[in-house]
Amino acid sequence: MLIPADWADLSPEWMTAALAQSCPGAQVAGLTLLRRSDGTNRRATFGLTYAAGSGPDVVFVKSEGEHRDAHARNGNLWNEPAFYSSGRPIPVDHPRPYAVLVDRPALDWVVVLEDVTGRGGDPRDALRPMTVDQVAAGARGLGALHRQYRGFRQADVPALEWVQTWAPTEGFSSGLRRRVPLGLERAGDRLPAEVLRCSPDEVVDLWVRYVALLHRDPTLLHADAHVGNTYVLPGDDVGFLDWQVVRRGHWSQDVGYFVQGALTDTDRRAAEQDLVEAHRTALDPAADRDEAWLWYRASAAYGLAIWLSTLGTDGYQSHDISLELAIRYATAFVELETRAALTSLE
Image 1 (cartoon, one colour):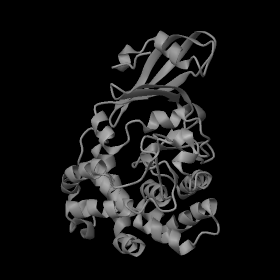
Image 2: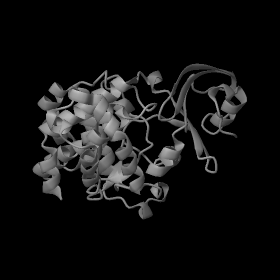
Image 3: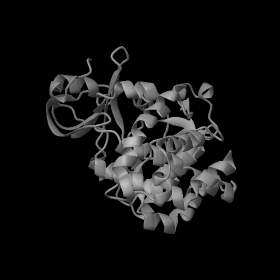
Image 4: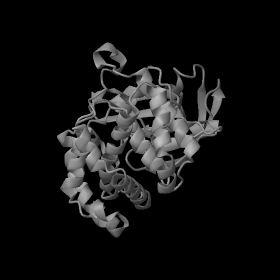
C-alpha cells in the first residue's frame, strides 16, 4: 500500500486494505472527507460506508506533512507509528489504531485511528480549558502510565526499544533558538515582566537545563501532553492524542505541561498542589511530597520555551492558541519560581 500524497487520493480500496487486519471481511464502499487540518502533521477525518462486513463509521487519519525534516532533526519522526505498532498496554485513554503504514525512504508514515468523538470524546484546546476535576482525572491517568513503566529500560521492553531518553539535543534546541525570538516579539507585553526581561537564549537555556535533568527516575512519557492533545470523555475522564513526541524521562515533564496548560491561571493557582498530589499518589504514595512539588515547579521551563517557539512559527498552531499557552506557561514560570526550583535540582 502506498501512502497517499493527498487526502483526495484515498480510495475505498485503499481504506479496505488499511482496515483488513483490524476489521476482517470489511469492504469499504465509499468514504467522505469530513474534516481536514494541515499543521504540524496532515490530519483528516473520513466517514465510511461498507459494501460487506463492518467497521468504524468514522476514522481519523494522520500522516507526515511539510515539517518532516524538522521532525527528523528533533527525533520525533517515527515515534507515533512505532507507538501504535508496539502493542504495549497503555493505561491511559487513547485512540484505537486500525492501521499503521511506514515508508522510511520517503520519511513518511500514516496511521488510521479511531475517531474518539464516536465515544463522546470532546477534543480540547487552550481556548476551551478543562475543569479542575477533569485535569485531576488526567493527572491520575498519567500517574497510572508512569507507574506501569517506571524505571523501564528499552533493552528490557523490545517493543519500546525505539523510545529515546529525554535530552536537550542540538536538533531540538537549535529549532527553539531560531523561533523563540519571534515568539517573544509577537507576545509583546502580554507576558509577565520577568519573562520579558529574558533574552531568547536565556529562555532556551532554561529549557536545556530542565530537559538535561529528565533522565532521572525515568518512566514512559507522552511528552507532548498539552491541552491541545487531549479530549474529555463522558464522566470527565481524559484521554491523550498525538503520541509523536514519546520519550523516556521524569514524570514532571508530562504533569507540568498538562496541568499548567489545561487550566486557566485562576484554577491552576487554586488547585495545582492538589493535582500534583493526585499524580504522586497514583504514581507512588511513598514518594516525597516536597520533592514532587519541586520538580513540578521546575517543569514550567519546558512549556515556556516550547510555546514561545510555536508562537514564532507559522503553520504549526493558530497564533491565538499559541499566545494563550505562552502566557499560561510564562505566568506559571514566574509564580512557581522556576529558576530557583531548577537550581535546587541541579
